[in-house]
Image (cartoon, rainbow, N blue to C red; front, side, top):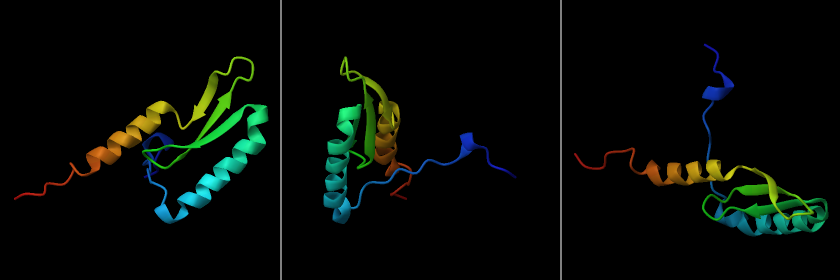
Length: 90
């Protein structure tokens, strides 16, 4: 049975602590190279995911963000709810 793209599981992982410094350095380098063309990179505090924003250079408004705020919020909720899925008492 084929799985449709809409039914594919979403994987949410945090950045391993040992790699955080390397990721922060990479994000800083990306920002130095791409800010002038309206792209901004950041590390999401809760999930450790890299967030990419396309910025309108005239207005400063965010045109697009990947992943979206909604996806980041769902990832935060999924992480919070993960411990509630298992019954820990008999």
